[in-house]
Amino acid sequence: MQSDLFEPSNLPELEQAGSLTRYLFESPMIAIAVAILLGVLLLFAMRSRGKDGTGLIVLACSILVAAGIFILSSVVTTDREMLALRAGELVDAVALGDEDSMQSLMDEGVVVETRFANARGRADVIALASNRVPRIVDEYAVREVRADLPGPRVARTMVKVRASGKVFPASSSWWMIHWERTTTESDDWEAVLVRPVWIQGIPDPAG
Image (tube, rainbow, N blue to C red):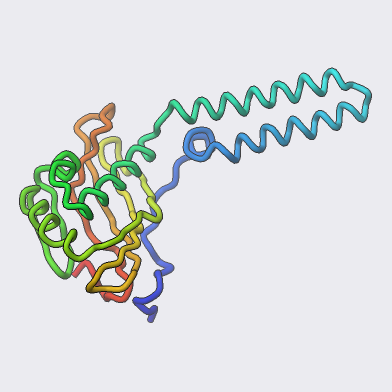
């Protein structure tokens, strides 16, 4: 049996974005590096054949392609990127007890399920988070966010949080957040279910 002190190897797997979306919009540095490297290699290949002018043109084109990828990734925000942003904002809101932010990030019928406390409805969840979390958490950081979209208006994020406080040592945890939006064009994702997947040192944190 795996120890609760170490991050499990069987965390729920979320579906990744397609390669085109991932490398053009979400992680463009690999595509940018490949474009520039290809241009440099072709430049040396052309020079070895005495075609310096052609090589410089190819290099210039590769730099333009790399610049285009960078600009495209800067102006386009994918649904996964928006969900990662919303998940980070929700962690901030809960950790700081920011009731206004929680209000805007949670669905009216949001549910929180843990072995320590459960809450149903936005008002109860905000009251639970505002009264409990800021009192016990001194420092926190979002280490990683994974997201997928099982449907056009439903999504999930898994968030890894590192936190410490006066009553507990620094520890890590993974949380699953389910989201919904009213239309496929909307960026206003609202959390409908929050449940711990793993909390370091605590067995069965979801209860």
